[in-house]
Picture 1 (cartoon, helix red, strand yellow):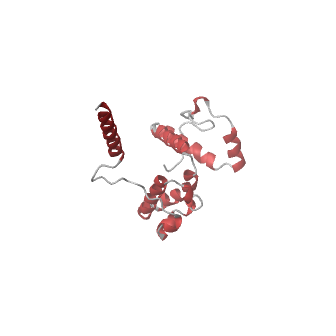
Picture 2 (cartoon, rainbow, N blue to C red):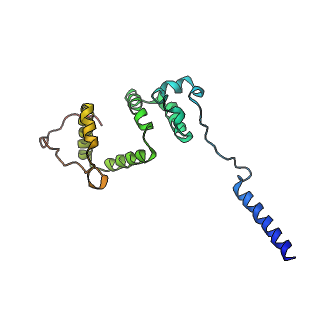
Picture 3 (cartoon, one colour):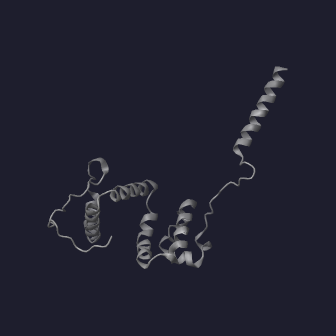
Length: 169
């Protein structure tokens, strides 16, 4: 008799476990579609062209995010479209940790006062204009202590206090 109870209990627990693992009735299990490059619309392929080489290596979630950008692309201003195209491939090639770090740095910069944000933008523009070998040299140097980029001084070295150029955000 005890053996019958044990068998019934085991069967009930197994059934409960199976039910817990299966989706609830009325709720479809959500799976993201991971389309191949050839399955994209011509408009999506045109917008996402910088990603063509890497497309098949992207996971389904990243593909869906990029497809969402491609859908919004026609409504973007020309300067936004150019920026998206320019940044698309390097961003897609970042690891999840690198993208998370980039987002965190963006958030920390957005919390700076406007004059310091402007200084950071200026320094970034200066960096962008450096020749590739100088960028590689800077990249090979050890990061500052704590791995964070320090907030810029109120007046960048070599700049005249109170001098401001007309920079767009």
